[in-house]
Amino acid sequence: MKSDGKGVIKMNDQEVLDLIKRRKSARSTIDSNLPVEPEVLNKILEAATWAPTAHNMQNFKIIAIDNKTILTQLGELKSHIKPEFISENYRNVSFSEEELKQKKTGILPIGTLEWYTEEAREGRLNLPPAQLGKMISDVPVLLLVLYDPNRRAPASEGDFLGVMSLGFMIENMWLMATALGLGLHIVSPLADEPVSSEIKKILDIPENLKITLGCRLGYLKTEETHQPRIRRNIEDFVSYNKYGDL
Image 1 (cartoon, rainbow, N blue to C red):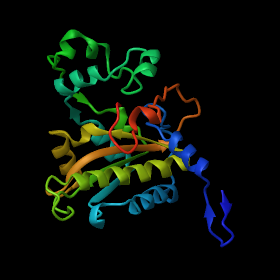
Image 2 (image 1 turned 135 degrees about the vertical axis):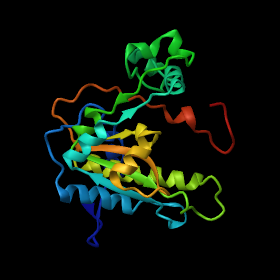
Image 3 (image 1 turned 60 degrees about the horizontal axis):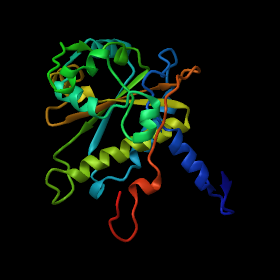
C-alpha cells in the first residue's frame, strides 16, 4: 500500500487481487478455541454496511451469535438433507483433483460415501435428519443473515436484485475477514424448514424476516489442510463484442 500524496492510502491492484484470491471457504479450518475480539467483529460488520444494494434498500439484518449456550442450542437442531441436493451435488463432483483441474468447475466430494451411490445419483437416497452439531456449537461466532423480502427495489418482482445485494454484502464481510486473518464458511441449511422456524423461535426473529444463511466465523488454525482452488481461465468465460464459443 502507498499514499497518493494527498493523505489517502491506496492498495495497488495486485494487493487487491491477492486478497480476493486468498478468500476461501473455511470448512474445517476455523479454530474453535480462539474468540473473535469485538473490535475485529465490528470491522467485518462495518464492511457489510458499505456493500452496494439495489436502490440502497439495505435489505438485510445480521444477528451475531457468540453466546455458547445459544450456539449449543442451535447445534442441537436437526437438519434434513434433501435427496435432490445429494443428486445435484453428485453431478457437480469431481472424484480426483486431476479431474477437477480438467473440469475447472464444481467441487471434490463432500459428505459420506453413501452420497455417491447409484441411489444417491438418482435422487432416491433419503437420509434421516441429523444434528447441526459441532459445525454450529463449536464456532466462535455465527453470523445469521436475515432478509426482508418486503424491502425490495422498485419494479423488481422476485427481487433478483435484492438477492444479488445479499451476495455483495457477504462478499464484503468475507474479504474483510480474510484481510484480518479470519476464516468464513457459509452454512446454508439454516434457511431450510423446519430448522428456520425453530431458529426464529429461539432467537425471537419476526415472522416477516427470512433466514437466508449462516456464516461461521473465526480465526484459522495454523495447520491448514490442503484445499485445491481451481478456477476457469478468463478465455473460458469471456468473449468480446459478441457472444462467442464458450
